Image 1 (cartoon, helix red, strand yellow):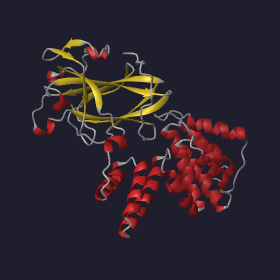
Image 2 (cartoon, rainbow, N blue to C red):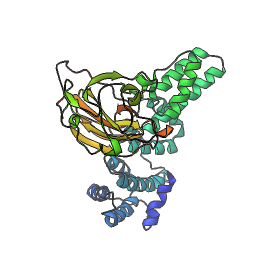
Image 3 (cartoon, rainbow, N blue to C red):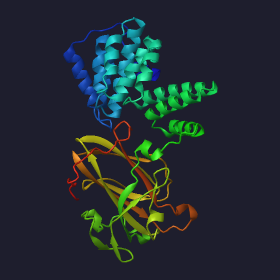
Image 4 (cartoon, rainbow, N blue to C red):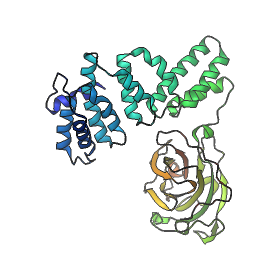
Length: 383
């Protein structure tokens, strides 16, 4: 956090005394900073605006926090630097607007990184407030806030366990699991609950999708099939029959029973070398909403949402890990058609035999999204 205090100094010095600025002036400075592009276009103007904003008084703190909402990462970093320069002086002069910062923090409509920044300075001014704020953050949009809430519950659960209060420990571990999304926290919680005789369904916890309609194999010999537009890329007709790699292929409904939600195409379909499978499902949403599609695979893949290609990656056997890829998308109200193309090459080494994937849908803050109830008669538009 303190590293940002040096930013304004590096840019040309910060006025030690607090300088008042009009609301219009502050608004213009913030607009200039937010306009800086990812490639640095607008850098010079933004640099000057940060220097001027950093010289402001405590009145610029809340507008600067609010300007982080929706800002690109580069602009957000510059805004953070200006905020911390002003906040440092305000704290020194006992002028930090604590009540305003608390109101900002409690308003979850704001960007999580901006709310987290507000929290950090609230705690610098009033460290005892952590005991009040952290326990309420188990469902917070901020990943950092959730991690702290989970860590506190884990510590309490372990203390209860050491004291022989097994039932209380299990309850605390369960509460911690409700907010945990990071495997580094989930895994030890799951292990502790298993030792207490309470196994955890990780597929349900993470919201992994394990049932798909699958069709294939299509040809990917010599890795030539990645750019080929096979029929599922043109249409989704679950009763259709197409010519595949070995003859006629048709859609079939398959479900993974793996404890980690992995959908093993090599085990479910054949052959599993030099081949392509397509998998599809419908996901109901009760409103238009931004999401992240989180998937893991060691294979080349393409992902479509409602017929629109969202992302493609032609790379084979670089490992597979949880939430390996994150792809932004926007669900429409009603049913949404998801299509995934998973390609396997012809390498014959033992480590190159994986042909599988994990898949889940999260909100933009990493919380698993559960399918909404949709009318049974509604069907998503086919690509």
